[in-house]
Image (cartoon, rainbow, N blue to C red):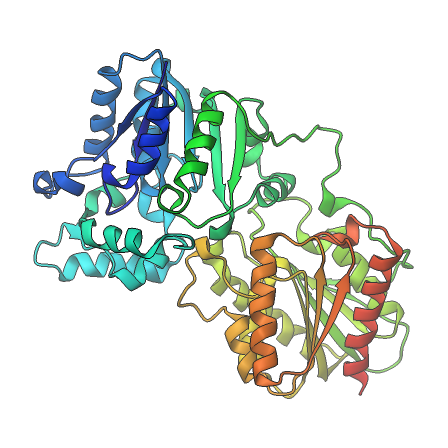
Length: 502
């Protein structure tokens, strides 16, 4: 028999698992929905000393009292921290750890780091400081639960129940660092990704392909993945589907992320067009590909996406796709510019925006560049970096282009109140030309942001050209070497250059 230990996230208790627990029991499993000390109907037990260690001890005690030979621990959101802490102390009892729509906490990291937006983190701590008992963080009002993850799919009555039963979170549970035992890394694990909250298997595979050594463990045969087409709270929105996934995870099923040593990552494959090599001038973190021309020429600044883990080699400006774009526009008489910026995490958009702005000013000041004719071209997660330029386009910015872009923050990025929202900024773009290339086989979570942007652009009468890539994938320039893909690149390049020359 398998015993499931279901550990909830912030502000909630074991009650949140009610429907899932019932379905698991119907299958014959033993189920333990956990209410941690100081939470739910145990909120009266909370005190200033209630911290992550107390919650780890709660789970260790429970594991010790479970007779089932196989224990599957499920951690949702904050719950993964005490799950990992307890599993490290009783690894011989744990058959599998399930990460339910949550990232991979690192040793020494507090749970508060699960909230990617620093402004939201500071707001939470401010709430605690303003409260009469400053060791507790009050739960959010009903209309702010989406700050903790997408509420897509939750019935209205269930969301009302969450708001009604939510309990303040002892601050120490979120601020005390997690201490991970080496034994945890050897345990089988399953990630359940909620696409409505911005996660997907395709995204995991793309991140693994970038070569971040911290993620190579995800290619282990003992690690599996499932997707659920819902928001961050599948125990409320899709309890039947979640129960089925948990049973399959316990049985060792799920998608495996595999990458052999000999396999070339998609972003390092050749550019889809044969382009003659052009002279390149490297200035700091900026590369200029120069045309055969006398006098200053217009420039296109290519902005890579991300987040790209720190230390990845080669860096994005040396990836074949960006080198190819830089050389291609240079062959057509325009300066192509590539750069590296510091978007290493979703909380680093401010840094990356500073890097892009500095690169643009460096380029405009270069005597080989006509500083009054510049275009900005953003890719993938770099699409959010177009927001500042759309919101207040300078006179010298002749065009903004975006290719398979993210044009609104994904729900689990925690950027609800940030300025990096092109779908909102486009309303201030006026008649600034926008060239958008979208791919037919885009990831659903990214395609939704593009549709949001296009709807806003249509409503405000923005000047936008959409170029579609039939059967194209995200990153198609090094994946889809088809005539349709080549045509899309050529059309987009010539459209941007046309705006520069007009």
